[in-house]
Length: 189
Image 1 (tube, rainbow, N blue to C red):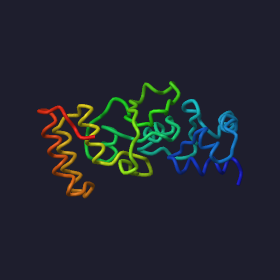
Image 2: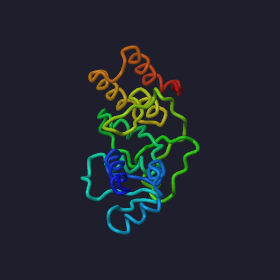
Image 3: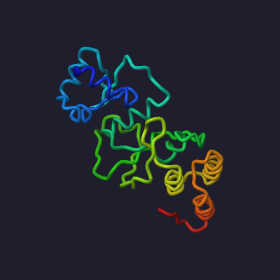
């Protein structure tokens, strides 16, 4: 398989994006991505992040680019995760991403994102439309801690229950956390 085919195949798996980290994982010198960009086969969107221009854009393009910008180590979280899960009509001004503490993406493009640094447990991460995203439970707790309107979170939780996205044993606990947040100032982590 040619380098071009390998790069395109990886990009297809990531909503059209490929990174220098992807190239290394494929055993390809990252310089090849710059050469492909110079020939017009790739678009450079950020340092170390490229997009295959012949692949159609999707509604998830901005989120896929954010994940690529974190070199594939970011997870859509907080209010951005509420939107991705289809549980809220909030419109965050920046895309919220949770990244490991040792993840330091390049500064270029960073003004588009709000990074939250923490180690997520595997059970706190799921996939939605091939994008890594915090689970509904983790998302609601993160939003609550970040100050999202409790009314929005109640509606999101009710919708998640209706869609079967939350286990019944978690519902009462989450409702209690949302209701008590304003009075006690404490949330569960």
